[in-house]
Amino acid sequence: MQFGKASGKKTTTQIELDLNRIPAHVAIIMDGNGRWAKQQNKPRIFGHQRGMEVVKEVTKTASQLGVKVLTLYAFSTENWKRPRTEVGFLMKLPGKFFDTFVPELIEQNVRVEVMGYLNDLPVDTQVAVQKAVAQTAGNTGMVLNFALNYGGRAELTTAMQALGQKVATGGLAPSDITEEMIADELMTANLSPYRDPDLLIRTSGEERLSNFLLWQLAYSEFVFIDEHWPDVTSEVFKRALKTYQGRHRRFGGLEEKDNQVKETNS
Image (cartoon, rainbow, N blue to C red):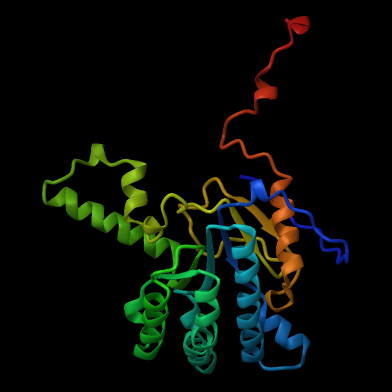
């Protein structure tokens, strides 16, 4: 796991990416909508509205580059603590988003998935989400995966409860529990073989996980960028991918060149 910030410099130079090294699974913590709106002397919901348009642009770019899964942290289990008017607006966003974007997703061959505690969402929100999933179910390209009413600790708790139930009924011995079994109980299980992100991007200059994909991010590369989410463009997204491509992922091991021992030093 490596941490780092993508360069905050804005440039008109075209970013050249190695299309053979595009991360298969990119996860994004879309932060800064409220701060961006404040800078514009607008209410916070104005930032969320603009952020929805950025989702569309980044989704298209990711799909065209060959990303297999794009997971977006849309609403956390802690976000219910926000003002009621803001939460109410956020709950209406999926319907507005999918009504306008599903035709383009179908054209781009993008399939929608949603993970989280969906039963706790307003009925209208659940219906909007389920409709988008059904309408794009036949698409075979990139998966656009929304984390909606999602929390990493809650997810792990639910997974442990499921395994605990199997132990209690005698179908599983505690000593037989493996990492693979735990992964199979998580909300990303259906994304296999791409269930663990290769790259996590967080916007708005913040450098924390905020209870997001705590298990799945164990070996991910982290790229933190200064732009608020509403300021993210295709170029900014590509710049984050360029930073990722400059990393050397070792997954706790050593590169071959590090293992080489020169005979002259022996």
